[in-house]
Length: 415
Image 1 (cartoon, rainbow, N blue to C red):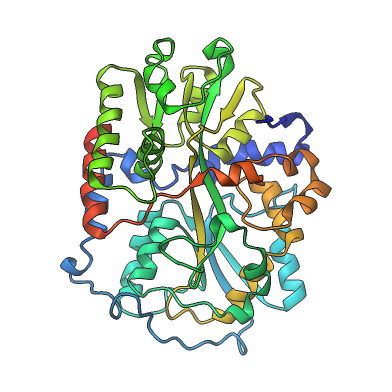
Image 2 (cartoon, one colour; image 1 turned 45 degrees about the vertical axis):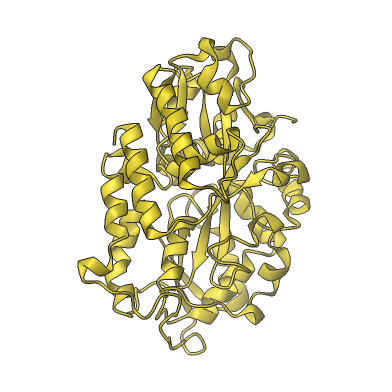
């Protein structure tokens, strides 16, 4: 596969990328911040026992609480997102796409960067959601496993397809039918998050690293291999390497993947399990190869030509961060207009050029090429057919599975 050339990026894009490595969505260990602190298994157990803690679902699972919409009278949206997950001007004093939306619609957007971790954020809004109360937010962005939980508990509003013509038409096939929201009735992706193999050619002596088997068995890589503290990524990539489908696996399959990784720990082939902090080790060459998130690879390549990536032959794990309208949000129709706006290819291109994650919008390639041809040709941002064909999603877990699997994984990584 052709490698991405970072030398054609604008100064503004390079600055944004470097900034995101230290202060943005990329700097925060996606879906794994608390686990990296050693409390992940307990956190998952806590999430799975909502009812036991005296906080029952607002209604039965799968049925959202009825909500009144004040969009016609109140031209506003309260939008919560991760940091550095929105385009900004070069002086960082404005957010061009949000300002354009307000100019076009008259709807003012109160944009708040108050999501630092899925579990932490869920802890903030859970009491109101459980009580069927307004969280003060009309639109939130959460990772797929948490989106699945919120939908399952009946805490997300069903979206009106008539308000989403661009989103419905332009969502790329890769993200259309997650098992936790078939047909995207409650959610639309903000970005995709692909897990690939990244390696430092200087550290590998020019050798390409393109499989989990190579990462775990190649003696020249011993002690310089990294896996992720995100269970779905590390186990999912290992399942693929073992010929298993991460979208349809058994507990025995899961245990087999854990055993394979355990051997890598016991033989000290694996240096460590990391959150996003693998970027510094990979950049320096302390890690010769590791599992990595595609957005980070792009950012690292901007400053280090030795950083390369590979898509394993069996495929790679993909997930998404998703837009949801919580129950009792006051401005659902306004929020739907904003979701649909970001599925217009010219708008999506502006966003993708800034944040460098997988863009879920069909037709963005041509618009992105007007901004920067190199970005448009990068399959880590705009997946081509070959890359899309290898995308695999980790299946949804029941509450019982989630607790059991996270406990096994926590034991593996020493959390």
